[in-house]
Length: 154
Image 1 (cartoon, rainbow, N blue to C red):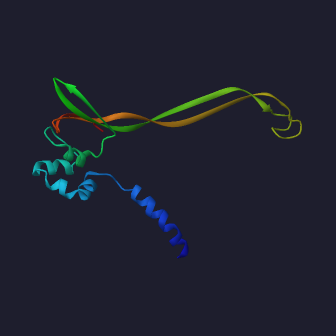
Image 2: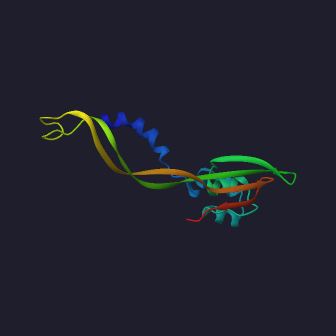
Image 3: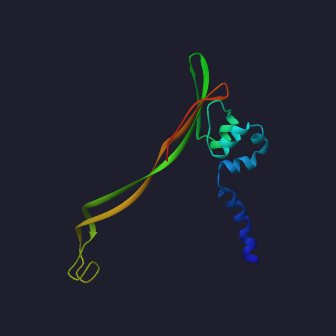
């Protein structure tokens, strides 16, 4: 029991960071914001979808916080753009060959009697995974309302 009490502060710190960020969780955290939406917008937000004419709060509830925001000007009007980033795994295989210096192979194995220092060949085959970021979606707001948006299909 005492050990459990020692780990309680650690668990209290780690558990909130493991929470899932979904439209339902954002709605539960912001019920007043959700109640202000029209019935058709509520249905779209629950599905994680947006449409032209929605305000920023509805987009936040549907898609969450953007990874970056920017603003610009087009046709004499100021607009704001929210960008959402995703990551894609990239798998690669590598073959390494070369000549090294150090303990070489002797008459009775690498570390046995007769080992010698010097140059020796080596090779290695490996697999690695890298995660590359990409822009998964963006929303363009004009006057605080969605003017246009784009999202990739899975």
